[in-house]
Each structure stands twice: as C-alpha cells, then as structure tokens.
Length: 326
Image 1: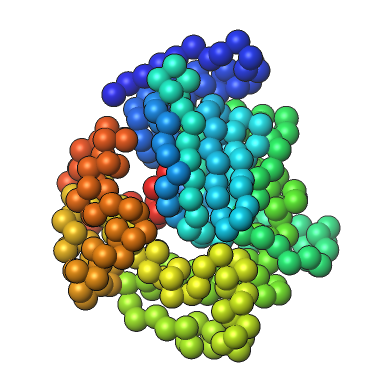
Image 2: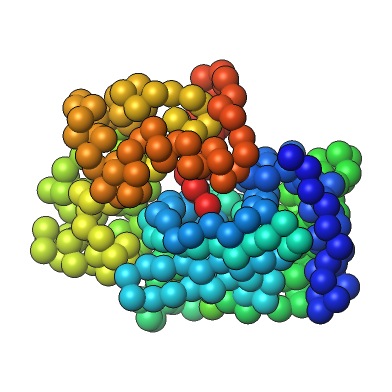
C-alpha cells in the first residue's frame, strides 16, 4: 500500500525534505530494509497502542510522528525533535502516534560494534573514563548537526552509487555523533565491559546469540564475573526484568517475528526458538502479548498490511537481526 503526503506547515525545510525522501525510499507501510546493511525504515499510517517490543542496540530517528517508550517507571519520547539510543538489546513497551494524513516515519540505524570499536580506538585519547553508571536507553534532542547527517544519509540511500560509496561513511558519522554525546558512555561501557553495566551488556549479547539453547542464571552470572545476587540486581537495573524472564521474552519476540514474517505456525516457531512444549509456549505468548499466537499474528498483519512472504534460510537469518516489533 503506497502512501505519499504533504508535510505539515509547521515542519522545518530539512524535515520536509526527509519526508519527501521517505516517500521514495519507503512508500509502503511496515518495515523496509535499505540497501545499506544495518539501516531500515518504518512507516505506520495508523496509531498503534502500547505493546511489547524488543529493540536491538540501535539509533532510532523519527522524521515524522511520535513514539513513546516505557521501561519500568520511565517514559521515553522520540519524535522529530528527539531521537532514541539503545546501547543494549532491551524489551520494553511502546505506542505510536500516526495517521494517514501524517504517517509515522522512522529510521533505525543498528549500532555496529565493529564500527564503534574502531571509533573508540580513534577517540581513546580524547574520551575519559566513564564515572557514572550508564543506562540502556536514552532519549536525546536531535540537534542540527545530527539532523543534517540523517538527511545526508537519506539523500545517499536514494542513489545506488551514493549508497555504495557515501552512505557507509555517513552511517559511521552518525555513530561518532552518538559516541561523543551523552549516550557515548553507555555504548563505550557496553563494548568494553566497564563497570557492572558493561558486564550485563556482555550477558545480554550472550543471551541473544544463544537464546535457542539452554541458558541458566548461574552460568550467566559466572561468565559476568558476579555473584548470583549481584548479577540479579544489576541485570534488573539495566533491563527492568529478571535474567530468565528476559530470556523468555527474547524467545517469544523472535517466535512472533517468525510467524508474522515467515509464515511459521505456532508449533514450528516455538520449536525454532527453543520451546519443547507448545502449550507452555502458547500460555507464555498470551501472557506477554495479550493475545494467542494466531490472534497476535492476525493483528500484526492487519497493522502492517503485509502477508507472510516465503523466505530462504538466509533471509530468515537476516530477518532475525530485526528483532523489533515496532
């Protein structure tokens, strides 16, 4: 379903240009992968109620519309004036403001740890030690410098040659801007295992790489170099949930993705993400999402107007990188 629109009179010239570029790059409702790995677009033409989501480490920039994220007792607003940075993969809840006349238009830039590591080496002499315990999620004002970089990224992605030659450097620039901003401490700590936060970030990466297998808290705590009590407390401080609840939530989000995008039935999706009992999977799925697997898949497809698309095994693996269900 293609949609174009005229930006409202209150938007800036830069924002109007980004909205126009969006109509070329991502005219359809739902997720649209860009030609640059790690960058994807999202369009919604209707409001979406508060629902569970799982974001990978990413920078989320909104060109139009508004989202609110909820983690524990905190609310994070991200719109055309503020962008969201997640330094670790986090399950939380969000709601979306959008309409046919003014769709929600968002860009997600995955935090590439290889790029971040290279930048940190270059910045090593100018950035000091992290002194405060960082957070997993930040909502930050979108200043003119970052806004300009985002517009240039969209311009580059609209041209196949520019996308290949220029877009990776602009994506690197956006990561640099984040690293040198207030969120930089969190991403640095997550990568270098500084403080308790960095050790929890390592555990979260372990969970996301091995969520299909057997995971237990004792092993995760031992690998993090913490006592069981400290690990539990620090883990909940970062994610607002317990370690095993986080594992369960991660599995359920991946299962929903497999059902919505790849057309797997509940039993097949449950087995794929590590559940041995289909009935247990269905109970826990409904507890998290509020609907049975069948009804949730119907709801998600209605929201995004997208039927399941058969995919190759390689495409399934790529799709699992996109653990957001925005």
